[in-house]
Every structure is written in C-alpha cells, then in structure tokens.
Image (cartoon, rainbow, N blue to C red; front, side):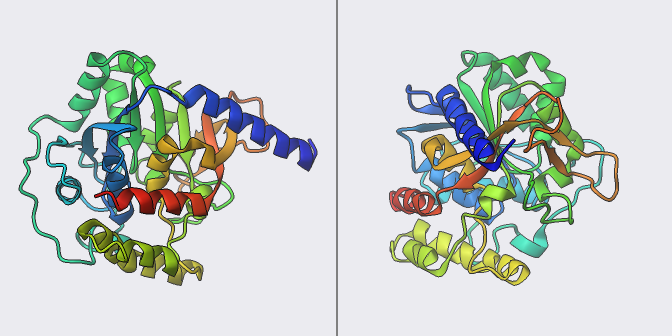
Length: 337
C-alpha cells in the first residue's frame, strides 16, 4: 500500500470510528478506573468540569503508579479539589492478576501526587469493592450506555470481565490510556507502563470483543505541557488551576530530562478529551496483541498498524492529536472549577 493510500485509509478509519462512537445524547455515563498520578488527577478534573457532557458514575482505584491505599486516597483528594465529594470512589485490586506490583514513584513521587502539600480527604471511601461496582453498574444501567475509562493498569477491568463475562456485551466503549507503537516504551524499551504492570489483564481486555479506543504514547507524547500551557493554568488564579500547574511542575522534571523535550506528556487527560471532542484525534482501527511471555518485551502492545497480518482489528489505536485544541479545551474546562 502506498503512503498516500495509507494516509487515506487512516483518515477513513478515524471517520468511521468517530461516527460509531459519537453519541448525540449527553451526558455520557462513564466509570473512571485510575491510579492517580498527577496526569490521572488532571483527567479526573477535566471530566468533573464537564457535567453537561460527562456523568461520572463512580471512580474505581487500582494499584499502579503507587499502591492502592494511595491511589484510592488520591482519587478522593481530586474529587474534593473539584468540589465533587458526591462522586463515589471505590478501592479495587491491590495487585496485578499474576505478577508482583511495579510502581512509578520515580515519576510521580512517593504519594503519587507529590508537588504541592495536600490535605487528607474527608469524603468517605465506599465500602464496596471497585470490581463489584463495575459489574453492578454495567448490569444495572441500560446496555450500551456506560463507557469505561481506564487510566492505569487494566486489573480491575479484566477482573470484572473474568467474574462476569455477561457485562462485556453491555459496555458502550472502553477508552483507555496505554500502550505504544512508534513511541515504543516508557518503562522498558518495549512497553508502556500501564500495560507492562499487568499484561495479562491487558490481554483479557483487548481480546474481550468490547469496542476499544486506545490512547497510546504515540498520541500522548504530542500533548506536551510547555511553559505557556503551564502558565495558562497558573494564570487562572483558582485552586484547581494552581494545583494543576504545581503538579505539572513536579512530574514534568522527569520526562524533560528523559526525553530532552520542552514539557512532559499529559497522558491520561487524552482519554477524557476524546469523549468531549473526538474529532481532535485520528488513528487506525487495527489488531492489537499484548506480549505476556517474553521477559524482553513483556507488556508490549503489538499493533498491526500497517495491516501486515490477517488478525482481526480489535482497537481504534490513535496516532495523532491536535495539541493546541487539546490544551484549549483543558484550560477552558479547568477554569470552570
């Protein structure tokens, strides 16, 4: 296939997928599955700042960037920062399906939200397990009306699918941050962190048959927090804006040194931005397989971007992002809080 035909095919893939996923009836019901993480926190803020388009039914925490006691605490801190203590937060799985937990304090700090000093949350943690909440919500709500938004390792989602396979057909869409193709890896030479932490869970999700849209490093590395963008948050003069700027100041130090870039990628907000303005993204509907056997390439997302196999496409794998539009949206919404 020529380069021109590939480009055309990519645009067609994006247009077809957007037509399939865009729902004119708003707000869109979502469950955020997350391991905050400063960029997870910004994603949660973006969702909670957009109540006209997004209804956050609940937030389920998973072990990932930091252990579960911190991720569930951080999720509640962010809800309170957004003025939304009414959003239920659930603790999910504390370890991957079969492996020892790998965390990322080297990026996010010992709390996961290092940077500014934060008070402990006062809103309660729900008693229900996060996986039970996912299962019950998908069974209770009309089929095809709940979108799952995983921002961390896919342990909770895979566990729910294993326990209750009937819910898979009821999922409207899974929009997740994870994986890489052209950008290869950020935790190993071959693997992106979220998939690497629990590749068996990722394999279950990608083979589930549910509609999947993936925000890999190929997209998120185009959403760089340059100095003018960070200053835009700081200039809001609000608690949320100041906090986002401070979080960014902290975690971007690692990626700027690592990549030699002018800023750090805001990975997870890409998931929520896609729900709000999907047309700012483009990609290809391709087959994605997860490497689980090799020690060298564990967690690699093997995306058949060039369609050189006959494997059935199972995910919309995004490749491009309008960064200016992304930050315009993010700034406008965070300023509402």
